[in-house]
Length: 370
Image (cartoon, rainbow, N blue to C red; front, top):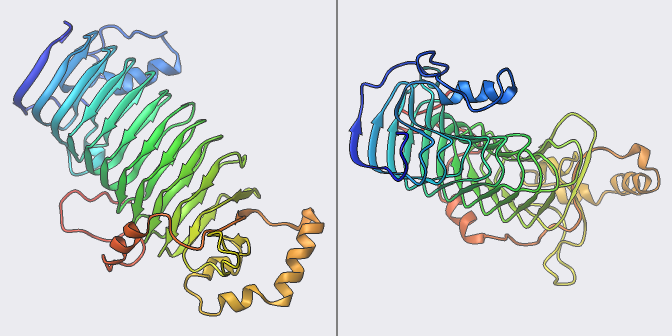
């Protein structure tokens, strides 16, 4: 489609070609400089076989469409304000054999109320100032929602499972919003690089890593990380992100950090089992909590952790670290941990699932193996 205001509705497509990427017959003109890194992304993600292709088509619509493909579902190149709603894409069960459900390049688009099975990526966006993926589901693929060098990405209220990464906002991205998503049974729940993003109200459960804190100057709040192998993982080199009012409970480990020795100081999160009491009734425990410390790592599961936390030896070590910063360890410290959950109803509902922390096997054909 290279005309504007085109509507494609109530169609079922199959028998699509098998060229996933860089199809020479499809590359007629690439709207970026030859040999640049942008050209490589465009030719890789925008010129394979697909059920529907939009080229410079403004304000078009795809609604109530089903696509079965071993390559791509929809590719939109420089097609502003495309709306995709009630789309179902069935890709390959092995992610290496398929590619993209919807690929958005160079212009804003909206994907909503849609379902994606298999393939490599559910919704991919590159080189666009804004795009929205909301109220959709992705299952059995490498990445559910994937943004590369996009600005103003908005991923909200999606249900994602059996992936390598549920929502992945790549580096060089700014002002992104990831909120209200549910990610289960994946390697990484939510992973946001870039700067000045807002990650809030997501529920990540039964993943290897729940929320991955990356990038700079971003806000993480009111997320629930429960029954993961690692609830929250800090990977940023500079501790400039604000992480507060999150619930981290029932995980094998509260948190983990990258290998470089960086101290991340957060405030006001709920760590189930953290030692301490609320002595003044302000809703916070009376002591800070070193989440990745030798006591903190086992506080939720170890019955003797509160006693050990108050031992004279640890108190002396803590005082020495205050006066001699050179012997401080990296990791995660919560300066004012919450005494009660931010979202207790969600934690209560998750506690009823009775699954152990970490990945579990469900009874469908769309698992992603990692």
